[in-house]
Amino acid sequence: MESVARQSASFACSYDAATGKAGRCGGAGGQSEPPGGLAGGDGGARQVEALQRQLHSLQLRLAAEQQCVTREQHITARMWLEKSQAEEAAAESAAKAAEHQATTAQWDAWHASQRRQQRQRRAILLHGRSSEGAASWRAGSGASPAERLVASICVDVLGLTSASSLPDEARSRLANLLGEAAELVRDPPSAEADPLCTRPPGLSCG
Image (cartoon, rainbow, N blue to C red; front, side, top):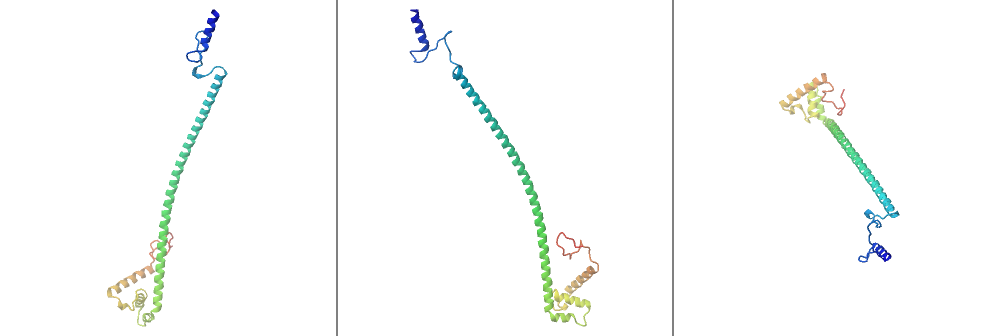
């Protein structure tokens, strides 16, 4: 009878007829499952090693991500530095370009004035060559040097046939201008204040 009871108890510990699953036995002879669903023995050790490998892999991935973030920060800082340097260089280039444009405009104006003066002198020479009658009048025997000069200006510059064609006020102004021109010839001004300087901008007339 005792042997039958022990067999029944052993069967109850190993199998539960109501649930169809293996039963649990308490007391000294009973065994409990490991926590966390880990199997005991070699299987549990393998699971622990797998978890450790996974943790190490995650740590390596985190370190790599941190390195990427640090590298991106360095790249961003360098880009901002290069951007500020490029803006400063662009501002300096714009200032130099404006200065060169101003100098070029001055040179263009000077060349235009020189060409205009050349055209005027050429027109005066052509007009003087074509006015033969006026030339013979300028070289008249009874004219004084001042009269011949006034006549030459009237014919070559003003395009008139004689000084008498000018009104009295115009002749007076012309005489004053001739006097000022004579003063300039006798006492020429300095190179800095010379209004007849034909040097280009940036070059002195000395």
